[in-house]
Image (cartoon, rainbow, N blue to C red):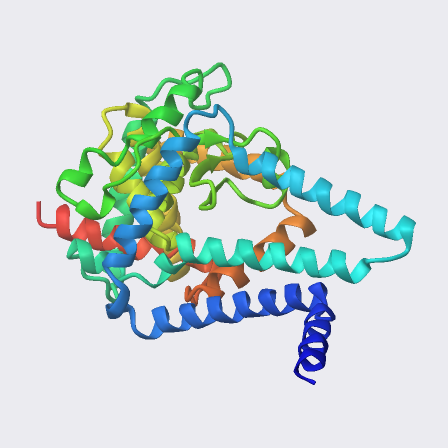
Length: 373
């Protein structure tokens, strides 16, 4: 009788569907990942700073390994994954069977990617806010403070706009573009001596080779993929903002996850650079964020900033608008909605608007460093 029971149990185990196993594992990974996200969001003091240290160390190691490749590996992995999905689906359709096996396999792969993305880097979104670590006071600013900060950043950008080398079209000369990638990768080395939060990988930033045109239509100037720890820039981004964008993506690699914080980090790194072009890109980008904040509060005061001595900067603003205008459309709208959902999922309540919130950091920095001088 015992032998018969053992045989029945063995038979029941054999009948457990591999499809069901994959489905349950996928569900378990997704639920456990959201559970971890909940814990990090509710009890950040339990996990920081040790999680950020582990994340930064891991990303530094991965990026160092990936730096031996002259291209962004993640782009090719996406192509291979997409081809694999399409080819296997075609095979399933032709044979008219095993569709559920195909579907559960895709769900398992997606859940693994989601878990790895979150565990390696995504949880850095719940770290203490950068201004707390830098001793900056973020608050409601008076209109006078906003005007003065905007005038400062526009003034500095306008001065540098007249000094940087330009091409035959009057745009920033990008002949040293490849060197910018290296400079951006090391851009935090100087400021990390006083601000340890910016310590980490110094390998070059990479450029998109396969998807840059698609990224342009999606309104994406750069991207960080933590699975390969590759900070990647869209080479089609407007040239005056390219060095700043490179520094922004490098900041993500240093576990600065928030978009407003990565923008401010990029300003600190690029504005302290020995490279004139990086300094211009820093103040050019900063002036846009603070100018837009002033324009929302007082459009007349913002327009009054455009004096004749700032004409070259205004021309760069106009050129940027013309550059991006041709990519506007439904694709970018959908991309913005997806990015907005992603950011809100990881506790950035402002979503895509958080990029512009760098103005708060920039105004606080102006008030701390320059207003009294």
